[in-house]
Length: 217
Image 1 (cartoon, rainbow, N blue to C red):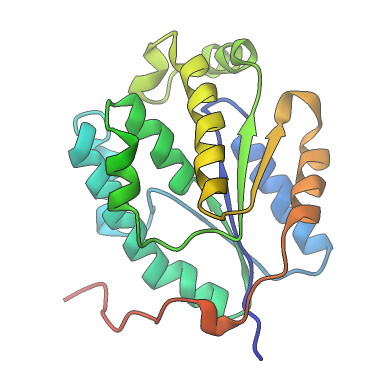
Image 2 (cartoon, helix red, strand yellow):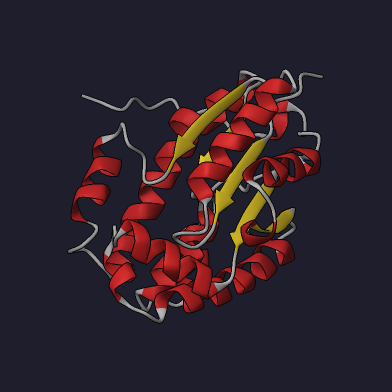
């Protein structure tokens, strides 16, 4: 049977060191001779993803949650699944766990978020990065706010708590979850721990059928 690549989602509060960790994980997997593809949400190369990124400050609540979910379904159909079928291990910078946190900060009930994302592909490994809220707040203050949530001094603590709850929610769905404290290890140490935790992916037939639609007129 043909085995596909593994799907790894990396999420965590702003300022937790996600970008640094993903770069270290990418390098770690390449060193282990794994074919790797990096991607991110909202998507950067689609009209919908660019719209979300450009209007994040003005669209909120359920409307934003639905847009993010729509971008995710398209992302899965047109990029993630094809890469997995090709044998690549896919690393997603933000995925479902981020929705279950960021849109909750906007006041959207978790039940709604789970319902609108009910059919999206679950990762083989969901990595939730965490750190002390004080450390996260210091990092955000040092680099400056990059989104509207950073102007709320209570956001770092709330994000950490929501991610802890999200890890439990995903685990209850049967998703393999790894929680890593980035304040207690170097990026290379965190990357090695994640790489060691990646499960053997299932056969390619376990993936949803490839979409037959196209992304343009």
